[in-house]
Length: 239
View 1 (tube, one colour):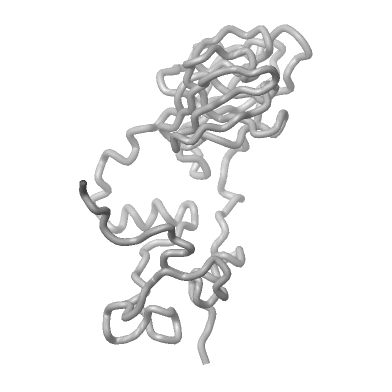
View 2 (view 1 turned 180 degrees about the horizontal axis):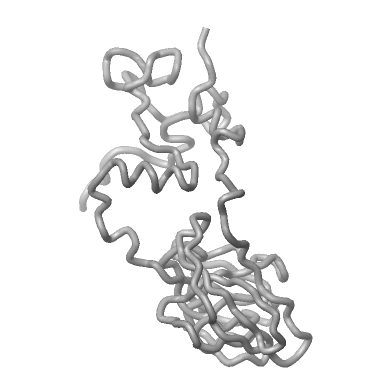
């Protein structure tokens, strides 16, 4: 009798595979946007949070309220940012997409107005405003995919800081262990062909799959590994 493979156990979302949210330091969200005008704040601190790949910045507004946002590349303590419809298009400022000119790099983009930012939040990422239409804005995401988003959705100006974090080699397995332990990441990984037959569809002593790894989109959970509903496999023909 077999058992659930690791992919299935991870997909279920049990406590063993969840990120330890109790160790995370802060949630990122936009401040309440004024109906008109703008609010101004100053960067007073940077936060290294294991729950985010990019550094965070603590903002203290002129009314003494505080908020935490994702830091853009190039900002420093003491810099001032603005939030609101009439805010200036400057590094780290928060504006509705409809008020951001074409060609400006943005990040931490809302999908629906007021959700606090959902896209282009990882270290080094940024999107680009391509064009405006009535009440929608065409945005090119980091994946080069274009998407029309409500003009009332907000975004920060610039690119997410920390883009070179993967350039330095890790060198030691122990360092990698503690990096992944902080976020409860799946590491080290292993190939399915290295597993036992009861643990994975590709498992066995032959050290190769022995059959095609393309599976249907409607395959049962125990067999849904490999190239799922792939358009094509193999080398591309030249010419």
